Length: 576
Ligand code: ATP
Ligand code: MG
Ligand code: MG
Ligand code: MG
Image (cartoon, rainbow, N blue to C red):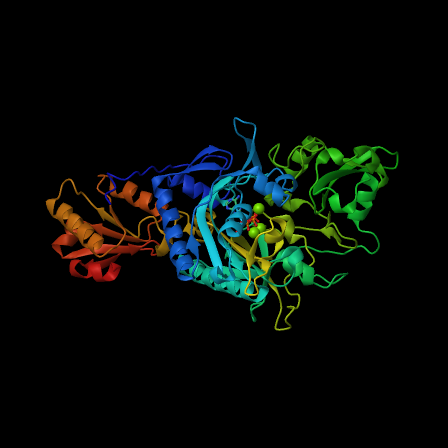
């Protein structure tokens, strides 16, 4: 590829709404272009990365015996009504109507369609097991689309679905996928961890998330450095012993209050069942002076689990909770937290409030945070000084670093991760709802045992950047770099020798199957190097007149601080 033919469009500055480094760098490197909240064009440079991710996934999925198909993006509502998800799923599911007023959904995932295919096509046990997968556009109307491709609304996912005749064989299919995922993530060249995740009502341990380790990750993962134990925080929480325990030197302190939790009290006061209480509310307490005047207003944060719409909260009942409790106004919150207006979501309006603690709130002291369970809330929560951004509710948990590992083989550590993959044993959840059966060996119809397996194809490049970058730009692992090698000729227009050497090397590398780009744009060296360092191409060959006269070119890996001289005759062997 020649740079003059390709499309390169780099920016000095990232747009102001790009909060995390991967978003900023993808924008600056010209990989994506925004067209609406969570909606992007994958520009040529970004698409190359996505296609490399897809290729690796395809190869390993095929090798694991899965078969590719493509299901519709727009799916008839009838199928989604069969499983009840058309009504049950919240606003994340985009529902649309056609010209005949018929309902459709834009696929956020495809269990319904694939189960429909299975019940029509897989009639006999002899056709099992079967694993169908697609690499396709998904749409989820995320409440907070952000961080570029990390949490888009339209994004690409690889989703696979296995069909088996019984539980045992389904678990084998699950293990096959869990292993294939390890090979896939190994090939991406990223540091990741496979962690146990909650398998919901189905029980068992057959749900794992693949988390790319990054300080900016939205998820907290718990692992034991001296054993195999690893779980996401929710799963680790479920196993953790409850009740008051000392905090072993963590930046936060926690003291579960005996008796009713704050959440239970709040739920009672609000007159809403505990299971549906607010997800998070910000409250203010007025601290009164001796004359009864407001001396100080303190903002409290209550974080409760469960979905909730703010209009269910009856503000008027709150003052019984503690003296002077009331909802804080947005202005107060903005002032106290020093955050941008609207960042926390308007409080006291009909919009749900999602409170995300960020760097600014680290200065606040003694928060109350409650999970939606009795005796399960924290008081006196304090944030550490150096909170990674964004620090989320997951930190306010009952599991802390230094706790004994559940397997008894050491102590726990906590780090942050980005969920890039998820494997899940489904059992008969969907086949039962949709009466999807096959004829078993005994001639009787039986429900399919299913599993589902996702990879965030467009989230992956963002996660890779969160993990691999420096102040100059992206540092791609070879496997998913838009180009693996860039040839930077110095003064190509002036020197015939440089032009010839560059063209020759370009041809030779292409012949070897190396994904190489020749920068023939005629940019000055400084601008040219800055572009490729921003874009993050891992290997660079610089060709100049002076070196050529001595029979050498310069090689520099994106992580190297200086270039190395390499004999012209040895370059191919180096880059092969
Ligand atoms: P999250 O917890 O981040 O919302 P999820 O658990 O809802 O993700 P799954 O239903 O498990 O996601 O989907 C499979 C994979 O699709 C996820 O592991 C993730 O990598 C990716 N994914 C999910 N939502 C998004 C999104 N909004 N943008 C980009 N990728 C996504
Ligand atoms: Mg989600
Ligand atoms: Mg998740
Ligand atoms: Mg998931």
